[in-house]
Structures are given as C-alpha cells and as structure tokens.
Length: 539
Image (tube, rainbow, N blue to C red; front, side):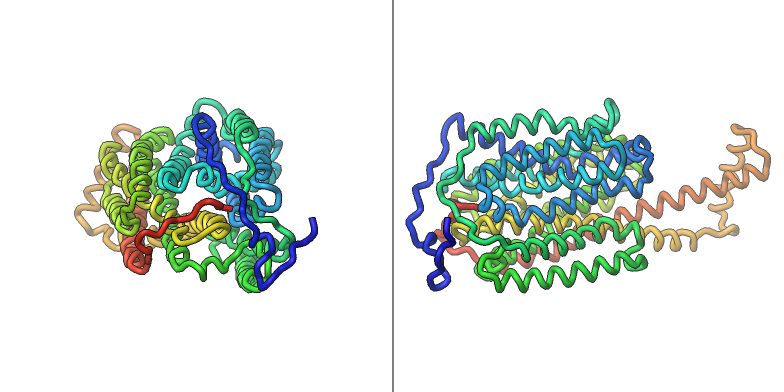
C-alpha cells in the first residue's frame, strides 16, 4: 500500500471515518478476559520466579552466583526495551498477530531455558523470553480495554490490576515450591502448557481491531536509541551494586552510553513525524506526566519492599521460601477482592485522586510498620500489616492507571499505557538497585555504631562472652582458648545480624517516607467533571 499523503500534519487515513468497533460479549468475552489476564501474569511471574532458584542454577550449571544473576538481568533488559515499543509493533504487525507471536516466543524460549546446557545459553534464552514477555503486559491491557464497553472499563481496569499484583507475589511462592519439590528447570517448563493454551485461545477468540493505525515508516533510529539507552540503564541498575557502582570502569561507560542515547532518543522522537514512541503525548496530558511520576514511585515501593521482605524474613527470621510466599499471599487475595468493585466505583464517578490518596497512605503505614519489626517477629506479626499492603496496592494501581489515560483519546491511549508500564518497570529496577545499595551502606554504618558500644571493660559484654565460653566448654568440650574464639565469633554474629536488621528497618522506613512525600503530587492532577476516558483504541 502506498505511503499515505500528509496534509497539514494529519494523514488522510486519520480523516477517514473509522469502522464501528464491535464489543465482545458472553462466553467469548469471558475467555478473552481470562486469556489476557493469564498472559500478563505469566510475564510478571517470570520477573520473580527465578530469584529463589539462582543457587540451584549456579550449582547445576557450574556457574558463580554473579554469573547466574545475569539470568535475571537479561530478562529485565529485554522487558524494559520492548514494553514501550509494544504499541508501535502491534500497529506494524497487527495486534492479534503480534500478541499471539509474543506468547509463542515466550513459550518457546521457556522450553529453551529449561533445556539450557550452560549458564550463557540460559542468559540468551532468557533475553528471548523477555522480548516475548515484555509485549504481553501492555498488549493484554489494550485488548482488555477493547473487549469491554466504555461504561465497563473501570471493571476492566480492576480485573487487570489483580494480575499486576498477583504476578510478582506468586512468582517467589511458585518458584520456591518448584525448586523444593522438583528442579529449577520447572520454573521454565511450567510456562509451556499455560503458554500454549493462551496462544490457542488468542488464535481462536481474538479478532483484529477494526480501528487501526497503519505504520507507513519504521522509526529504526528511535528503536535503536531506545534499545541502547534503556538497555544500558537497566544493565546499570541490575549490576551496579554488585560491581560497586562507579568504581567499575564499564559501569561508567554504560552510564555515559545510557545518558547520550536517551537524550538523543528524546530529541529524535520529538522531531520525527512517525515516532516509535510518541513522547508528545506527555505534553498533551499533564495527568499522564504526573501519573508517570506516581507510577515510578509505586513501582519503586512495590518492588523495593518485595525485595527487602523475603531477604529479611529468610536470612534473619529463618523463614523458608515457601513460608515467605504463603505469608505474602493473603495480601494479594485482599487486592484481588477489592480490585473489581473499586474499578466499578471509579467508573461511576468516585474521585481517583481520593482513592489513590487512601492507597498511598495505607502503603506508607504498611512500610513504616514493617520498619518497626524485631528479630523475634513471627509470621503472625506480619498478617495484618501485609493485609494493609494488599489494601493499599488495590487502591493505588487502579486509579493510577485511569489517571494516566484520563482525557486522552484514540492512539494516545496506547502510547500512554506503554509509557506507564515502562515507567513502572524502571521504578521497580531503581527500587531494587537503590534499596540494595542503601542497605549495604546502612549495614556498614550500623556495624560501626554497634561496635563503638562494645568494650572489654563493659560488664554486659564480659558477662555475655563468659556465658558463651562456658557453654562452649561444657557442651562442645572446647579448650579455654578455643572457647574464647567461639565467644568472639558468636558476638560477631550477633553484631552482623543486628546490623542487617537495623538496615532492613531503615530501608522500609525510607520507602514509607518516599510515599508520604509523593502525596502532594495528587493535588496537581486535574480531571474535568463529567469527562469520559476514551479507551476505544488503546494501541
């Protein structure tokens, strides 16, 4: 088809009347809903399912833990590259074809991951899996919005939000179960039957949307700059802490590459006629710009807290991976229960600003309360606190999604959902990387502080050492000099554990403070009364 003529900056196709959109109903609507939710959850589960299997992977494939960490890094890099391009690629290839192809790529790559003969083959296959999986989140969201009528889109947002919270939470639980009772390969093989079923369902029930936006020119420069810039940034965030940040030369080089590439990307996308990612939508919607900041903070808090909690309870409190997942699961159920009615209520006119304020305050209190836990805390101490987390996330995810697209129309919706998902992913990466660094610094600071209070002339210290030495002599039969060494080691272990405990508590409270400081941003959002969000064409 010949390239469309441009008239006054508007294509001829844009001026032609669009064919009426047909909404799915009945059984087809139910099946499509289940398909897109399961597909989105597959992608989100795989962002965390492998985390608990790194030790087994490194041992089985003869790799170091540092090399095995690339299994997580490669997936995250591929994800963050393809997410903002999903709208463009859907328009180029046809949304239905692109969606089915992405599911099949994700599924086939999962098979290859489980059969990987060495660690670097696994890293490559995980990158391919990330390219397929990254498309599932924004495209699933777009398909869901097109399936539901405008008056039902709050319900659709509520349903989709359940998957957003369920995925990252189920990942460690499912991964821990598969590693404990089967083998690490099953973290990938479990995707195969679900992925094939989702691909068949999409092929059978999905229709290509009648409202299309043709792509007459591929923005290769924009795609390349985005891939290099975002990929480099994600690499820095994933590997920076392990490599002591800017003390490592190649981290400095990747930082320079990321900065130059992203600046060039922004300039190019603002000056080309057919950008792969239309950044002008941020200028057209103040709400989207503010929503992007809030989404970044939400991603930071969600993934940052989800990173700290398992480490805290497993390393210091002795929880197993399975118990950790079970402790987290009730909060996810709470989110699932409130998401649907909350989405309906928002569609009927409840202020999303007020709803999100409740959610952010709840999440702030949740993080602050986690920051007050002790080394004697048990699973029962976390029950109500984590339920508050589930409540807060439900009240955050749905309104922030609706705020991002409020006042936008047609193709802008697709760009907004792609940008929003990318920002949340980057927020999560920043949350994990910066939280990890903050904890390392606070551990060192608390260690120095605790050691300053220890003195061989302190009666409490002397009493503690004597007790440990006597126990070592009586029960282990150690000589006096060996018992003295054992006492010093025990004291060292106590200091180390306390230093980590205090650092984890500091990290929880830092996230709480970040959320509290972000609350005034809600005052900047403006939604016209009676304004309807047009989601009729979300790509």
